[in-house]
Image 1 (cartoon, helix red, strand yellow):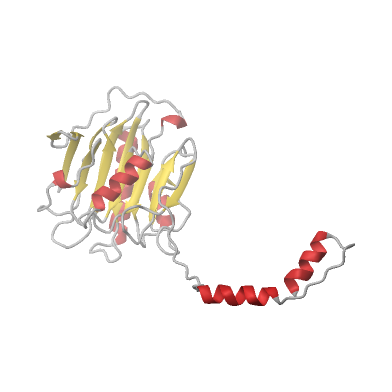
Image 2 (cartoon, one colour):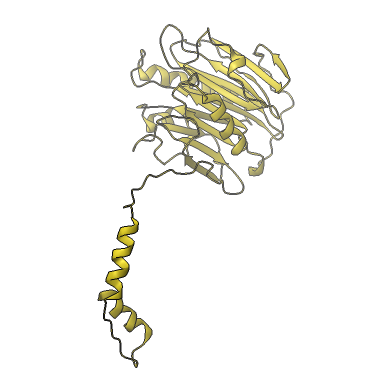
Length: 297
């Protein structure tokens, strides 16, 4: 099931159904890296958990994200989209049906025009959703994918579907940028590249020592790709692809350290011991030598 919703501002909401017409009129292609939208990819391990949307909002605003691909949303038909929208972003979601967990969502900044790109032969087994985004310079086709660790389908069928979609997009929108992003789990990286003819741009681990959350692009326009700790509580790290100035990590690292407590009695004993020390240093020695003699005594 595909749904789309847009929040226009803190005081007004507008719900709309996705426009699935296939038109490409009015496209303008400009090869300008500065016009690339900032892309954010995260396996959120459920946006339904408490404060997940607020934490996601902090990341989207803090990193100035234009497009966010979120996997494992755990959203179902019973979840009202209004509860998961972010101010200033349109929400597109594809929920897993008939089973727990799963699901993908795409948040697109209201500064960009976006709609669902539908394709014939779509299978509910594959958690794959395509969004057509029209930026100031060109069209961008975003594929959001979640490939679970234990799929109910053969991985080869998903690879066939990806190859079919990329071919169809390249034919229908020959000047558009194609991006495929999400959590690929054990789906072979080389197979994805071979079948889709896209370029992998994530080479840092996103969960443990594994590169599970990936981004594939048809053109190498992004100048930087960073893996950061998300504000959302998840065992995955977030991936941010961007151009321009270096990003500042928003999340501070917290460490707990144990220090031995000092009591007034201990201080008094130390001062008593220090007063009884007999340290003699030659007057003709340099300061460093005298200091070494002091610290070694």
